[in-house]
Structures are given as structure tokens and as C-alpha cells.
Image (cartoon, rainbow, N blue to C red; front, side):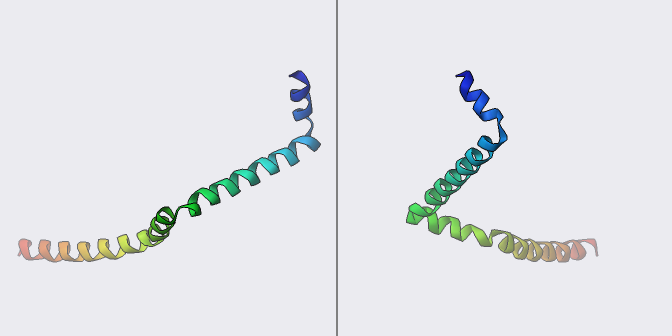
Length: 73
């Protein structure tokens, strides 16, 4: 076990090991996201959420301001 720790302390061994580890993790994450059709379509639909919220929020804000102005008069 101590040989493993000694091996990992050397940067020339650690960098490729970490690179492969992150690459495999990335590939597994991509596979997880796009492997199921329902999950894939659901995640794709999430990409427009920030734009939808901005539009809805601005419309509600405008309506709210109009209502406040009418009440204050």
C-alpha cells in the first residue's frame, strides 16, 4: 500500500492518472445524460428555462406595476 502512495506522489505518474480519471468520468457523465431518451429530451428542454423566466418575470412585473399605479390613484 505504501508503494501506491509513493507512486502517486510523483507528478509524472499522477498527471496522466488524473487525466484518465477525469476523462472517464466525463464520458460516463455524457453517457448517463444521453443514454435515456426521456432524460435526454427533458434535459434538452431545460436549456430555455432562463429565457422563459425572464419573459414571464418581466410581464408579471409590468402587470404588477400597472396594478400598483391604479391602486395608488
